[in-house]
Image (cartoon, rainbow, N blue to C red; front, side, top):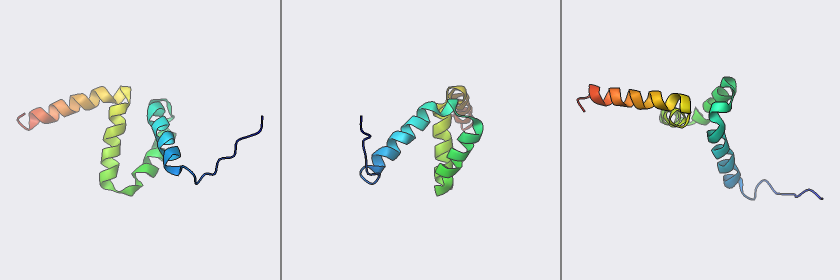
Length: 81
């Protein structure tokens, strides 16, 4: 079977989206060093992006999503809610 040649410029947004979705799905399986490098690269766009990305990743990760919900409940109560 002959290899299929795909120009990398044909669908870069689709490839980036697919790769990003895959990383989110397996985030908790990645070694911490890899997580750190990926996070730093993705968060290099600015402070707002950094905090939003951190919250998103924590909400997707089974070990940290429960603590994020607990923190949100504590924060809400501390504001009188």
